[in-house]
Length: 217
Image 1 (tube, rainbow, N blue to C red):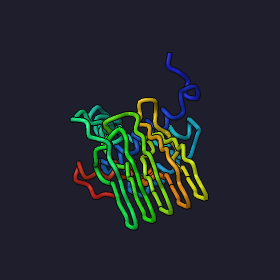
Image 2 (cartoon, rainbow, N blue to C red):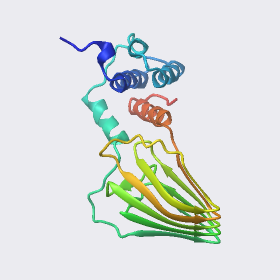
Image 3 (spheres, rainbow, N blue to C red):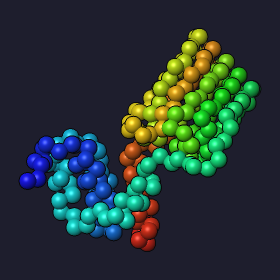
């Protein structure tokens, strides 16, 4: 006997609805406007029946090919290649940036003195589940961007400085965990998400449309 709809985990029902919306949008069965409107509603509601109703009129279901593409797009990247050494990001009276598909070592040392630095983990390739970022920030500005499926902890000592961790840490037990340690003197540290989950879902849906030769949203 199937489990009652209202007894199923709400996030599982939401994921199934979003998958169905993406599949049908990618085949041009619903318009871009309808897809984005329904996606907004799916992300906002916690009502089981409302989630099911959002995709009840759509004929296509997710298949193994879709599941594989989604897995590649949303699972944090781990590399089994040769381990890289600890990395240093030094910015003294200047600026320094790490972004794109860079290999993340186990430990990153950031020295920011009267400068600006940016660590962007959005598209990074992780080699370890646990990553430490050790910060020395004196009169500097450090920005750290992470995807929503990575967990972040901050253990900063601030002297007339500020540290803000705005990342939601929604990753599961197998997700990468970044621990930020160190101190900030008259400096600032901000951790935030560069792309929200909705933005990532829309980008993925558009990539699926392009696979079928459709125009993107």
